[in-house]
Length: 160
Image 1 (cartoon, one colour):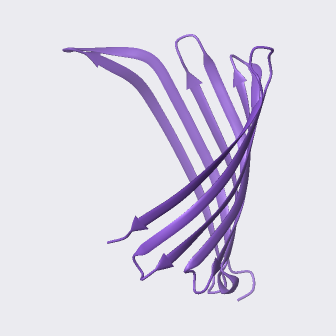
Image 2: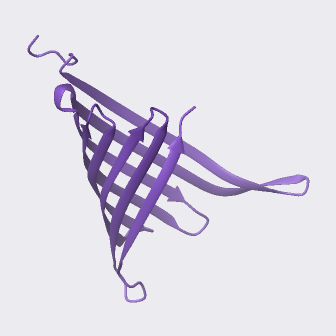
């Protein structure tokens, strides 16, 4: 029916994750609170076009860390496109994230990630995957050089 949120042809998902953590340590028989606190949040929306096996996702991520002498805040969006082939035995994903970091309220760095990945399922239980990532970090400040790095990962998993 037109206007339905969910149907056999399209599905939607809204996901909110919130995490709060207090870090501490123990030395022998005594416990020491370090006062370090971490806050993480993620809000994501996905739209699946079932007949074409295409998923579009947009997300916003945030992290706030309160350390003994330093406070950091990182925030930014993520966009991704996933396509399944051959009855979803083959999947490919293209995604990108951009994050801006602040250290003690001052602009710290900007990070851009570009990812391409693919996976293949065979004999229903075996999965093989390949992921390629490029990361570009632009830092503000004279003593913090900018850099670009590339990472490739080949993986295998067995589902039982």
